[in-house]
Amino acid sequence: MVGNMYSASDKLGVDSVLPKGQSQVDEQQMSLEQADSFVSTRTLPTGFWKILVSCFIVVYFGSVIGWLSDGWPYKEQLAVYFKDINILDGATQHWSLFSPQVRHQVYHESMTITFKDGSIKYYEFPRMEKLGEKEKFVHEKLRKVFGDCIPWEGYRHFLPDITSYLAGANQDTNNQPTLISMIFNWAENPPPDPAHWNYRNNLPAHSNKQITFTYAVRDADVSSRTGGALQNNPKVLDEK
Image (tube, rainbow, N blue to C red; front, side, top):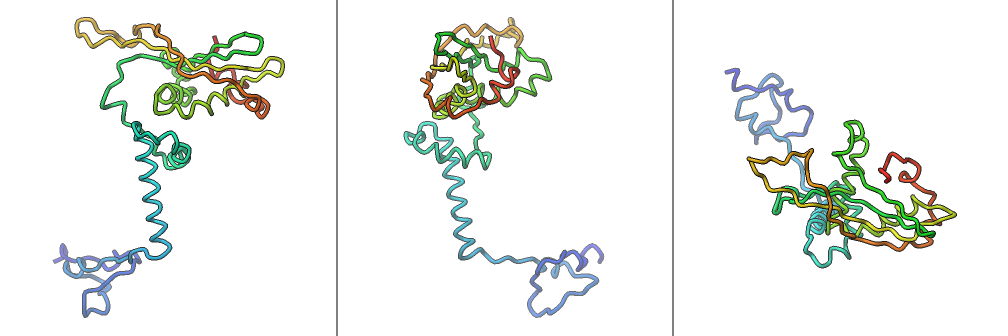
């Protein structure tokens, strides 16, 4: 029957194993039993490739487990090794948005830069509710870093490098920055109430403020940098 026959051309050029005792395949058709035995084979990796694959598996799962183990006491010491691996393989995703505790706060991150003469510059990192549709796309990456990552405990080991960059991006040869403070602004999100829904355009003001990190700027932070996107593009951050 035609329904039980397969064309030999379906092998697509791969090496195949024929049923025992059969030296060649009919170029026109095979029976169902022959087709079932007409399979490609591949030998298991040995030697160098076996070691390479094994090392990849160990490094990958080790870096992912280490990255996600927020309660692990050695995470900060090993983070410097995990960071580059996780960025390369895209394993920095985290499911804390959905469980075990859903966020109950509305918040945003801001920063103050104190200069040598005592003046203070205030930055409010992008807030989606204050941006137009086009601006949301432009500033999404910055919001991701300073909204979903930097405010939380699991990312505090990145703060020295980030604040060092911010210092270099705001350097002024006549009035260098001396201190950077990261500020977490927040308010409790009202509980759901069907009788009095609190819509997104009417959320409470972020009136609670907490300084989460301060960084004393070093000479190397400003002398070795020429300024970055934060300095050269005033649209990157909303200065107030």
